[in-house]
Length: 365
Image (cartoon, rainbow, N blue to C red):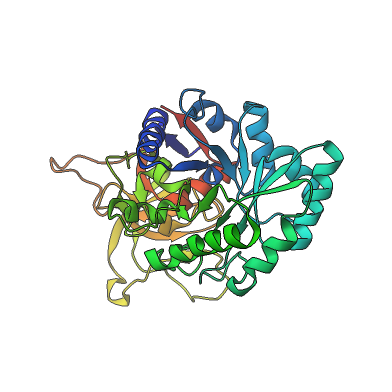
């Protein structure tokens, strides 16, 4: 089968580097592992005691993933990073020490669930700052907090925001300053201190380097930078983190010289995606390789062949066709044979989908 290759030590080094960096900045952080969908092999290979020693918590957006985190390390502090469904309140309280919330009815359900087990469940109230995803409207923050802080089994430990995930709204000093203002207002009106202002994610990291985050922003939720070494704000490497942490290899299962232009009447029955072709090439041929990976496994736009001469032709549910030109190297010898592999770079979404596919092997090195 095709294979996802995971550079475990480089990832562990990235996590340690970020932990040291945040410690110097006086910032707590949560490692967000949702790209791995609770894969136990990953959790056991990456989240060693030494690696997570300086991490505030490990987070995910799926309850099944949090269950696996607990199974691997029962003492691990966990955070559920999307507003939970009220129906799963009991599970959230059982598997998450902290959850991000924006619905009062859900928080009431969490309060009841925590009460049944004698727990205090910690929450961070999410505030809408323009991304139009989860978050209490800014005009309602004070009244929302007032309703929540009287719940006996709920401890509000902070305010948070989510920027950059849906519309790509950039985090700015002015955006994040609004969280600081609400923190001060809550402190004055209710005489309550909030421990965390969770305004940071991988996209916010460059602002630290520029000194462009308010001093009250003291909690980051980071996944992409830890695992891929980049901040999505400019898609650039952050610090000296490793960016070559994953690779994908697909097997050549057929290798033949074929025409560039398909023959016959083109219908709407195709279920795949294809590259454009020029009718002027109707008589031309190139060497095409069929690979053992398809749409069900990964989006072709999320992988890039390391060999620049490999060009995408088409992809169906379980196979991909690439054009490898004359299939000759500089010495004129055959470059690829059936059974060889073609190696690809992967982005965040490619890794997420490949790890979710039961048809893709994974190998830790």
